[in-house]
Length: 251
Image (cartoon, rainbow, N blue to C red; front, side):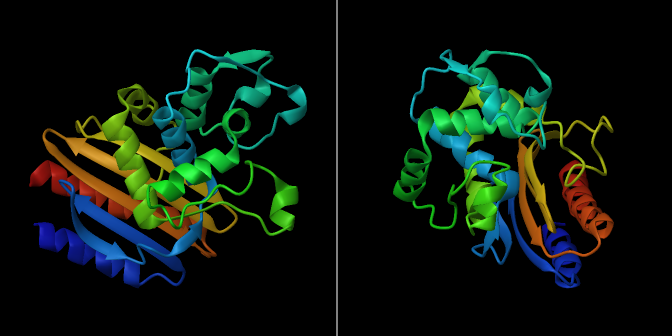
């Protein structure tokens, strides 16, 4: 069954006309890697780097952070809609992951500093993942600054945070953007737990997920760039996720 799963996913990937990277691990053993070390624009996957640094550096999660209205940004999230003068760091992290809140992410980044996050990444052997700008910073984008990651490093970042920091697991388990890898079976009641983080932007769609069923795990990182038909790209995510779920349920 494992060989059939990998063969069918490889066939789906190689038929696509845009840039794709994917890794699949079954029970922590790598079974598939295509363009795993290619650097992609990260979109919201950079939030995996931010949360790992904050939790690894033993920040005071009860510390309150002032929410300057002048620094509020749009895009994903709910903080921009609320009139809250300050929030605990813990709550900002929860928003950053569970609803991919860009404003919350920026307040977290500003509270700890980009250099420390990048130093953390470098010291732990991450060579493709870098935080070069805040979220929704169009001026930085115009000047050629963007955030980056790779398939293998984004998968490793998700694995690290889930394995090391129990506080974060409910934020990923209740993550609201579940229409990609988990889209074909989410809320089906099949018993598979989904821990994931997505990213999206112009011609960018990413998802990194762990599917857990009983004592078995399938971990998938799928990053794409350059698709001209987003509906078909999302369909690819759904197909791959569904195949992985079927494998878990029927192994």
